[in-house]
Length: 173
Image (cartoon, rainbow, N blue to C red; front, side, top):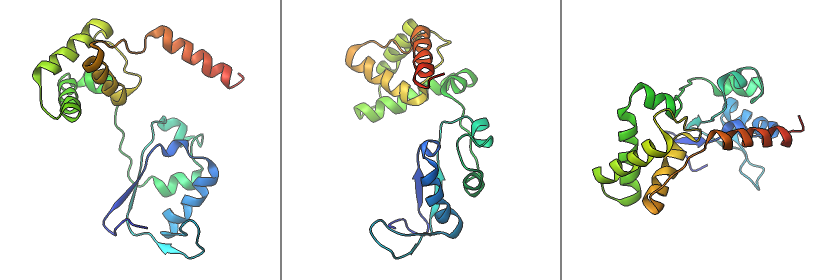
């Protein structure tokens, strides 16, 4: 309701919302109207809707994530951001840029010394082919860990295999 006509709302992790919420959002996307919680009146939405998910595009297109009618109302422009491991492989300077941004945001100042320190820990503990399963959020945690404890281990292959096994057990497969 507070979004201006030239503003935007972000629906983060849209791939995690259940069908009944998708149905409610259909009206906003199609008719640009909604009923605020606790009222029966209808209000008009004039802004843009931006949605983000980390779900694979194939799952989205195959109807595993969204209802088809919801997907087709939401998908006017799709921007795919490659995973961090791909971004670093294609453009190695990307790691420096992300570390610079993250360290500056965390400490309030730019520091080549801290960038080098984090890169040394990454090189020593993770190696150049680390998969960064947590993407940029994991990189942020890596920086935080190096700043606080001077160390970061990341997710090792054994950890990922245990996680996959736990997910399989949790789903009753």
